Amino acid sequence: DAKTTQPPSMDCAEGRAANLPCNHSTISGNEYVYWYRQIHSQGPQYIIHGLKNNETNEMASLIITEDRKSSTLILPHATLRDTAVYYCIVTSGTYKYIFGTGTRLKVLA
Amino acid sequence: GAVVSQHPSRVICKSGTSVKIECRSLDFQATTMFWYRQFPKQSLMLMATSNEGSKATYEQGVEKDKFLINHASLTLSTLTVTSAHPEDSSFYICSAFAELRTDTQYFGPGTRLTVL
Image (tube, rainbow over all chains, first blue to last red; front, side):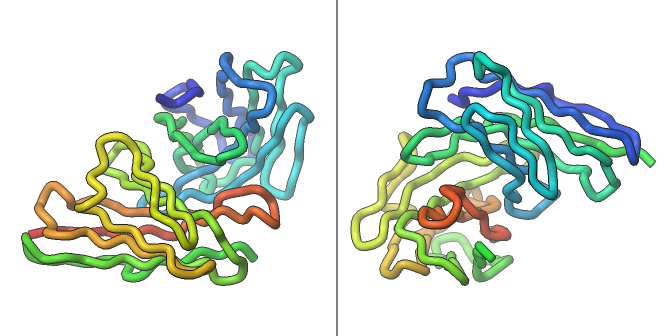
């Protein structure tokens, strides 16, 4: 079973920040949090990952709470092309991914 | 960088035939590749972990004699669906683990298999 829980769907206005939450209350000390997204009928696309510090790259920011039991992916200025299913995955050294149901983000014009 | 390709992108076959799907890491070496299956409106399900030069490790409930995996080189893994049946129709996705780059899995574009 997946070790993460995410809301099934969210809407976001174009140009606004999209904040996607993820709960991973059973995360272990050596497990990373990864975020991917899947646009319809394509393979998942890597977005960002982190262990305990907040991370930022050209696509998004990842905020991990101090107790590491939850995280938030932030897309700072959502566009229509960001409409996708977003998956939060917790994994350790084997890097075996168990996908949960993800969050279906719909960016509205 | 970190591009993974799959071939073919779509395949239609008759029931009882075998189908081979290739997964290639184009610009990095991958000692570990993964195969997933995705049914419509569902999430990805891990089928097996493919390690270069050794036997694949299958997830519980996945028939190893039906889904043959070969990882003969550091850039190529193949999945063969043997004696395919209509219930094997699905979206098959591979990923390659870029261990020496970012400790991240990069996914291929997927292969849509339709068994008639």
